[in-house]
Amino acid sequence: MAAFDLIIKGGTVVTATDTTTCDVGVRDGKVAALGRDIGDGDREIDATGKLLMPGGIDSHCHIEQVSGMGVMCADDFYTGSVSAAFGGTTTIIPFACQHRGDQLRAVVKDYHDRAGPKAVIDYAFHLIVTDPTEQALNQDLPALIRDGYTSFKVYMTYDGTKLDDFQMLDVLSVARREGALTMIHAENWDMIRWVTKRLIDGGNTAPKFHAISHPQVAEGEATNRAIALGRLVDAPVLIVHVSAEEAMEEIRLAQSKGLKVFGETCPQYLFLTMDDLDKPGAEGAMFCCSPPPRDKAGQEVIWRGIQNGTFQVFSSDHAPYRFDETGKLKAGPNPTFKQVANGVPGIELRLPLLFSEGVGKGRIDLQRFVDLTATAAAKLYGLHPRKGTIAVGADADIAIWDPDKKVTVNWDMLHDNVGYTPYDGMELTGWPTTVLSRGRVVVADETLQVDAGSGEFLPCDKPKSAEPLGRIVPEVDPKRNFGAEILF
Ligand code: URP
Ligand code: ZN
Ligand code: ZN
Image (cartoon, rainbow, N blue to C red; front, side):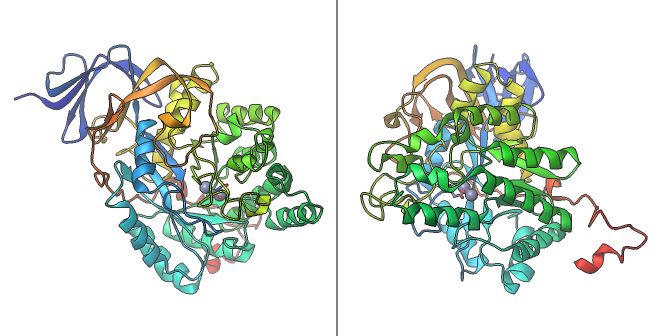
């Protein structure tokens, strides 16, 4: 009998800390041994000349979700997870999104019903909290956190989703008490809607004005406020989809003071600019997302944040809408920028883009690549060490990369249901050619090898990232402090 169900021979194993050429033995879906001459497997993959990296974890993606504007995503849990897998991602953490009036427990059940029969890779859920009622705060959230939904996103913007500062504090204090991490979409809604009204009233309605309507200062101000709100109640926060210098500097400053403030950025802020929104007719709508892409100089700023560690995670924020009446053009063929569903696709290209432009161009090394795309997310969201690394005992979620494979991006080669890609025509070097999830070959020979519904739900542990610092209202002299416990 062979020692392993599967052995991957001769590849170079890359983790967030090391690069080693060795064989990988897989038994019962887990990495069972790493080394040379470790024995044989019932199945063998020759990975000579290839890189073995942990399958990516996409910790920010919208799948089979109805947006705040009432538009259904183009990808369901089948196309979304298949597309992720072809791009080297083996775990997704999409959102179970509460719309106002929804009961959180029912929302979670609903998303399980959507994902269970369709996902081909493993998945967890973040919650989106838009209606922090007494029931949600005191009963549903604590129970759901205990059941493995240990992170939630809140919005400081959009009419349908925005929480005010009072509500944010309520949510943050529940997160602190129960051990969950709060992800924050930080943009100042009043600034955005004020500028939007002026633009629309003046007849400036084309997609390119979307970028003007979401100024950097709106993102910077809200990021500053989000950090302050977290500080007041000593709750760690993660600022999602950071697009620009003002917000990034707020995060960096907070981190330099020792606060538990985490940052996420996304491909659209490295590879797109606001000029992409200035396409003929309504075509710029394909590039409308919030916050919007900025300019060329701003892309370099985001690279700096990736290099200097301000950003821990690089997620896709895959928010897929077709360029037709079901998606971007739901309001008609010539919508005002205000009527366009926000979001861009990117679940399949997230890793190839960062590999080619980051590792390939010498901006980051392989360790940083793995950390940004897999390991850090696993740690931040309570999935480590089961996910996010290649180590004995971890799930055998492995993307085997051909670092020299050259690809010119076009939508036909992708597996999502969007109909276009914002990255059309980009020439990339490096591609995941074989992708394993729990030792199962999910993608090989450019073909899907598994059935719909073979992905598994992952309950998340309460992550260390969510543990408070123990510094409540730090300005207060402890001798005169009544004891911060009276706040909770
Ligand atoms: O424009 C974006 N990012 N759309 C997706 C929803 C969100 O806010 O993440
Ligand atoms: Zn958002
Ligand atoms: Zn998003």
